[in-house]
Each structure stands twice: as structure tokens, then as C-alpha cells.
Image 1: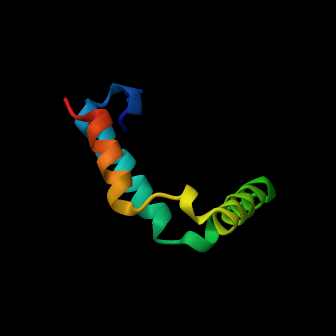
Image 2: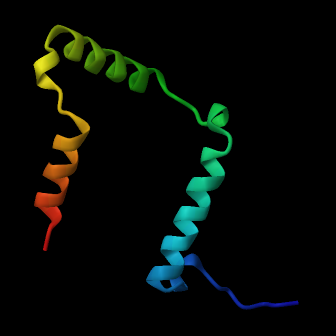
Length: 74
């Protein structure tokens, strides 16, 4: 039996990223099992109502990508 006390904190950064990806993929495989809390539903409803009342407040996907790329380009 292996008695070492290995931890996820001992993983290298690439190994940690892979672990996060694997966990995310596992969660995404069963979305119905992910809890959505009332406060999250209310926030989503608030945002949707805001967008319906003020459609110009939203951004297109291209605008979002451009903002993200310009913010993190280096």
C-alpha cells in the first residue's frame, strides 16, 4: 500500500490545469445535477429583464472577444 500523502497542491501547473479541465468535463457531462440556487436564478432574470428593456446595453460576441483580447494581449 502506498502511504505517501500526495496532494493536488503538489502537482505542476500543467497537471493542475489538466485536473481542472477533467473535473469541468466531468461536471459538464451531467448538467442536470449541478445545483442552480435561487439567488442565481434571480440574478439571471434581472439581467435578462435589463437586456430586454435596454437591448443596446448588450455586446455582440465579436465585441466581447475584442475586449478580452485587448485587455489580455501582451
